[in-house]
Length: 631
Image: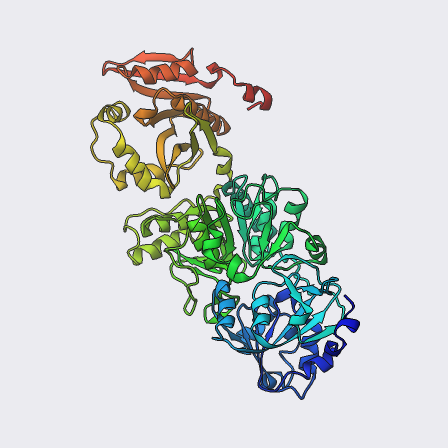
C-alpha cells in the first residue's frame, strides 16, 4: 500500500507527530526492542511537551535522558519491568515501578484501571491490504494501542512482519511517522560462562525430548538453553524469544511437533535479541505472536503437556521463597512472567518449573541461597509454587517437600563454603533438628558420572544415583517398607527402628570414594521412591565391604546384580580390587547373586552361621561395554 496515496493526511514527521501529545497526557510506549525510538527522541527533545506520565515495559531509549536537567520535571516514568538500562535510575528513585503479572496488564488497560491518552508504537510498513505488523513487540503493546485515545506509529522497514495477532490496519492508527532506523538490540551478556555451563548441564538432565519449554527474562536462562542442543523435538511457548534459542531453531532441536496445544508453532509475545534473530522471525510462519494475556495465561500454558518453565531469581531462602524484582529495598527487575508460567507448568500434565540461580554473588562473597530473604526483598514466587532449584552445584527438588527437606536440598546445592553456615542458621530458626549434620563441602559435580538407568521386564525404569543427605526421609520409608526377613538378612537382627540419628550417621560417612552408597529410585505418581540401596565401605587398602537391599516385589528382576556391577565400577575408579561381604548361610539368594557375578569367589563358613565371601574384580566377566571403553 502506498501511504502517500491512501492516507496522506496521516503522514507526519516525528516532530510533528509528538506535537499531537497534549500536556498532562498519559502515554503508553511499545515494549523493549520494539519501542519507537524516533518518537521517543522527538518527544523528549520538544521542550514544549510537559507533565507526561509514561507507561512502558522494558524501557531502553529513555535511559539516555534520565540525567538531563529537566527530564524528571517533564516526564514521570512508570515501568512494569526494570530493564538493565534503567536499573541505575531505579536505584536513584528516578522511576516508578508497578509490580504486576504480565498476563494482567492488557486487561488493566482495557478496563481503564490505567487510562491511556496516547500510544506511541512501532510497526512494519503496510502490506497491499493496509495491514502493518507490530513485529517483535505484541505483548502488552497491542492492548496499549487498542485502548489509547490517540495512536501514533513509527513505520520502520527494519521492523519484521510476524504472524499471529500482530497485525494492525492503518485505519486503526491516527498518525504515521515513516522513519527507518535499526531496532534496539538486546545482546546476551554472560557474566560467568563456567557457572552457566554447569547450570546448563543440570538443566539438560531435567528436560526430556519432546517437552515444551519457556525461557524467562535474564541472561542466565538465555545462556543455559544453549545446553539443550542435543535434545529432540522441543516445543516453545514463552513470553520472550532471545538469541539463546536461535541455535535450537537452526539445528531443528525445536520442531514443536509434539506440542499438545498449537503444535508446529512457537508461541511468544515479543522478541529481544540481535538483528540476526529479527531476520529469522521475519515473516516466518513457525512463530505465532500473541498478546500477554493469552501467552501468559496459566490456563493456556497448562494446555501444553510436559511443560517446563525455566526462569531465574536473585535470592532463594531455605523455605523456598523466591525474590526476583529487588535487591533489598532497591528495585532491580520485575515480577514479569515468572509466576504466570510457574503456575501454568504446575497445572500442565507432566509439567514442572525450574529456577536457575548462581550459588553466589559479588565474586563469591555472598550466598544467593539464604536463611531469609534480604530486608526489603519482595516475595515474587511463594514457597507453595516452587518446584526445582538449580545452581552450578546441583539440583534441589522442593515440590511438596517439608521445610526440613527443603533446607537439606538447598544447602547441598549452595556454594560449599556456605553450607555449614546455612545449616547453623536453619537450626536457630528451628527448621531442622539441633543435631543435623551439614552436607559435605566437596564439589560433587563428579557424581554426575555415577547416574545409571535400568529397564525392568515390565517396561518401567529404575534410576540409580549416589545418596544425598536430603534422601534421609525417603530412605527411612524404604527401610520401614521392607519385610522382617529382608531386614534380618541384611542386619543379622530383627531391627524395628531406623532412626534419623542412625541414618544420619551412616550418610555422614559417605565420602563418595572410600565409602559409597547408591540408591535406586522408581517413579510413583509425581514422586520418586527408593526401591534399592547398595553400599561399599573401605575394609582395607584394596578391599571394600559391600551390601545391598532391594524391595521384595522387585526380587528376581536383576536389580541386585545391576547394583553390584555399578558399585564395582565405582570402586575400581577409587583403586579397590576386591569386594568382601558377610552373608547369613540361609540367605541363598544373596550368595547366588555374588557367585553369579564372581564365579571364582572364595567362601568361608564361620561358626555363627555366616559366610564370608571374597570377590576379586578380575574374576568377574567383562561386559561388552567395558571391553570397548577399557573401564
